[in-house]
Length: 370
Image (cartoon, rainbow, N blue to C red; front, side):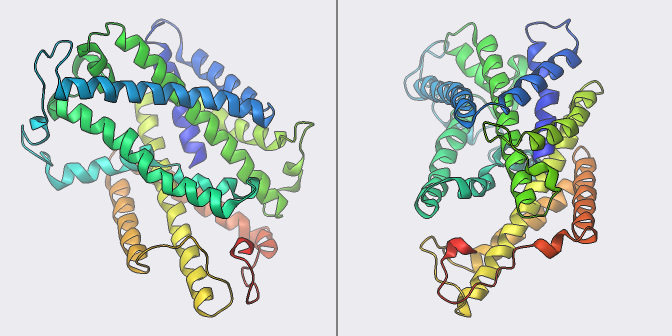
């Protein structure tokens, strides 16, 4: 999943740069974006965090600004809308699901790709002082952030513009909102925001990927030469290994970037769904061990188990079927399955499974030992 996301962002970066410099080659911007983000991942963690903070801040300010100006258009009327727009566009022009259930299903892979990432919270469990409290708070906050930044921004856009007019000559609906609010440089501003967003996604996924590979090496489930760190405690060999694999993405940016991007969306969405399958299976196993009295009950509990688990499982099955069916995402689906199959074969044939942590603690152990 991380490789697919990073590759997609490498492909997307030159498209944003060509907004200002249309005659420059895509390979140049892909290569420069690659060097910048790989270089950031060789910095100490606090420097990495500083860059990621500003990347995220730019996105947040842009989204909040769009929601603010859009809200004024809806309920007050500003800029090119002298009267309040209201919310009637939500049900006009065909109402909800104007393309039917098929259109809704075909949008699923791209929604999964866009919303993916929350599962990476687990990567930080070993680096926080109080994971039971900190991670629980982070997970609970995800719902609020999705409600504000995703649902809130979509609500504003769909209220202001009929669904069949979103994008248009302006491309981005965010650009449309700022333009009609009277900000004439909206296209350039939002292009910069989207560029930094792509770099932020590349940056955070590369960071998460190197840490996962390093942890696997620490558990003897990946080559031991990857355990080497530099003076800043950066697993630089992991960074180099993943960076080498991402060079393929730089080359792919030369050939039909839109098709490659859709394939990477398919691969990324498939990987996200497979990750959640593993999460559901792991949680089900934990519940069985809990019922057998082999572990203590966690204070952070899943409501309505096992019904919520079966509902989530059904959604995953439908999502994978849609990804496999979609013409533009089918290739990515196949690539992800082949990659997972190869890695699984290597895992067992190399004997790495013999070093797996067996989750059979004695009664009374902490849930953090699972």
